[in-house]
Image (cartoon, rainbow, N blue to C red):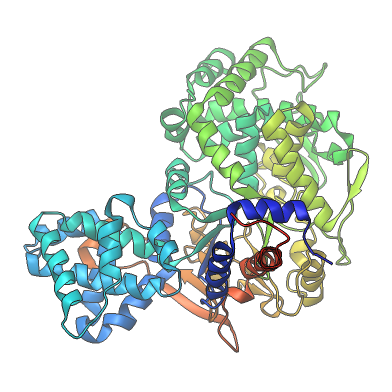
Length: 627
């Protein structure tokens, strides 16, 4: 009995209309299965730190330096290897620096082209020629293709041809452009797929430039983090998400991102604070934003008692006459007493006319910003709540659990969800909010940003306490029990089984929680089944973490965890050939090399080959006419 319908095979026959076409495709796919598995690169919690993220992507977490040392360490030496890497990472800047030092003559250009050609040729050995051609900058595809596929023969014809190409490149003044094209190709070939495990936005000053960078990258996927969810909700029109974005933007001094990149002016907000609160100072503007945010959040909590967040109706806990707030640990004085928009005797979450007007103005500003929509649509189109890929489970936040180590049951819309079903439900909510922007879905986007049982957050935010209570003991934010169980191998295996992965060989790759490496905390949990790769790209975290981020490299030989020192800038890389220092730890070595046949893509290719073999049998048996 056929595994494929006749209709499917007839559609397949439109693409492969005869026996030679089918055989050619079967030969190609069978050969692809024998290629080594491509390198996957995992990064997380980018938080607007463009310079460091750009460098990590340029050096592929040190992979390129390793390849350069292996190929040229004996002939070039360590300093020249670093200099060559600088050219690969930042071609225009590095070549300009060589020129200024009087080191960029024709001989150096030829040497650089030859070295980059050799490196690109080595990296291309894991791919088909067609794949390599697709990674080449189109304007230089012919030149690069000819350079990479040098054929040696007894009369040295190809060597002369190759030498003539390089000489023509230099003579025509195109050497620097070709070097840049080779550098771009090398970076594409060094990593086949990039996985961004959440949190592109907030804290750092240049998230928009990071998105621009990712949009140029090609093969990548994104697992949304809670900060990405916040911005998706804001761009879709959620008032609570919008005013949280505004507050965080001002708190971290990132006004340029909103105003210059996305065209969202802060002037109406500043004018509102001046008119209503009597001050245009930044601290007062942030306070005005906080109060308005507490109101909007309170309205959501009241609309959705199922969220179980009534204890976060913080304005209801305030004694405005006494200037205090009642918390679980006692009564505390407020650090500010100016609340001109709150009626203590009326509905404390009701907006004044001026606040309502401001809210509508910013909903329009966020929804109508085309640059913002373009960036967030890219994150939406390439993102998901979680991803299973080649035996690994990727998600940013957590799988909500009970203190006993079982999946927490969470009620939404009259239904109970847990484990994978909860993640799928969250994914559907994001899609509904982005596509339709209905109030219920937009409210849920705010909950997903900060809810205690949200798979993106997993902790109870104490924004009110941090803003208005001096006692820092009240700032501690309770976490979901998941974070108490990620050292437990049984709990981690439970999660892997829930997502259809082998609990003995699968891994979870998790972001969201900075690893305090400075205090001896390890990013490797549950005996090597779970990795946390949020180590502190964000400069605000680095005093706590002691490092500048973790990344993960998964290639055909095994899995390596990379820890990085703080990035000291492009100028130091160029001027001193000082790469971003990284420590590499092998966390798993495979007993045999892994090939495409061992991957998810291999399974898809084998399924396609089965269909092609059935189509071939129909052609050969005369049951389907060839064209």
